[in-house]
Image 1 (cartoon, rainbow, N blue to C red):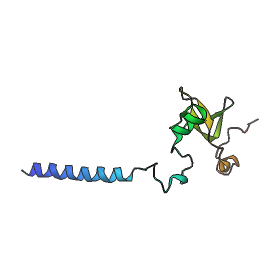
Image 2: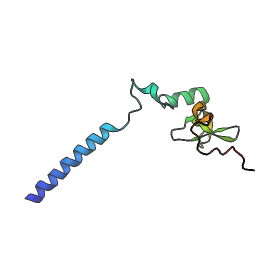
Image 3: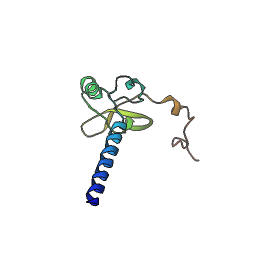
Length: 109
């Protein structure tokens, strides 16, 4: 009998933990804070399809400009193969070098 009580308690604790974890998951469709995101994904599918006839780059995809990677911007829209075609604006903070630990563009000659 005590084993059943123990199992029921464990199940209740797990349900409570799952409930609180689901409550803490970040919600990207919230009205009040959607402007706070650096790279918003709200309506990105419609924007990429309507303006560029591309697909949204949902993951963190590196920006490619003229066949060269731009480490200071993320990809906004990609083609069906996942190749970046449209990028978000370049981050000015990193472009100034204030937060760059290693700059690959420097030559070591």
